[in-house]
Figure: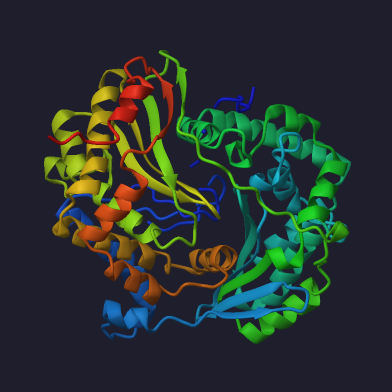
Length: 511
């Protein structure tokens, strides 16, 4: 049975969230989106930077020229943005690629749902590519396949996206198909029942992924009593009971032009894209019933915990987080640098105790855990800044002790050399998002929704350059020091310390 958050109650890429997963920048489709930078050995880090930057430089170096990182920053295509009369936004970046990625990003997700219809966003997303009134199921699939195109979609807590990668010459057809899918989904009763079973099966698979389960629990306890505590997939009960009328009502309420962005990257001309948007999205409604625009209520953070003990499981999965800032808060960059200092670790990594991440070195020397990663998950007005690890039941207390000690060190004594290394890793992660039209398109769509504009790489680099060790210490103190954390744990967790002990490790007593 799908977990339904209790009254007292917990992410992982919501698409469209800024999240630091061990250390790079991503808007992960599906469960909660973000920036993650990995901290490993010096040679490993250097190799990672080279691997991340190299694809982005390829288009500039394939003719035999050598291009520096600074030149790349100022040689990227400009993002052009146009707003139609109905408030629908069109954004694109043109390059010489023979392919393009185009998609529709919507400012809607599980946070806009209530207890009774939780899961409806995900249900609508599942049905979008299952046929339209103009293109029944098989016809829809054959038309996309005949183009050699690739369709994808995702739902997160605050965003939904539908996008397609195709040949640049097929841009008009791609936009027309996406517009048809978003606006004219057939919602046939037989298709609804078929997808209902698919979603229920997916929910069972997600329940088998303990990392996903832990982050859902983390949201449930951290944002208990608010919409952010709900899972993206919804509850089993809701999935079985959602009707066609529920789906239609949700679409008519939230699928409005000012909350949509048509984003494209690759071999696309902005003028052509705008003309296509006017043709296919110009009639998307922008008015709400009774002129009432849905406003997201503030989702309060609560320091609390959820423990699900199961000694039959081989490993314990534990996540701890404090409340972080929302998307647009400038504190995000120092926090991402801080997460890069912590880095991430997995038993499969090389480097041993010589890894540049101090916590990774400790983990290797003391055989603390199987893996760990830091994360920074952002939403419009709040976020989760935290640490997630997997270990056996006998090492939980030690792993948590060293992780919280690393947090305290970020607040009090992180060094300039550590920050310098972390900034380089963070830069490489941003550059890696230039590798292909799809990640660029995803970044454009999410940026327009989250920031109201596309933030260029040169601006990210300038913000990173401004961060020093003092900034990291001040910002980490603001969000971490002496704050009540949210904790979620699943597995053989008998050794997990009492919440009061965990809370007491959020500050240092000095004599």
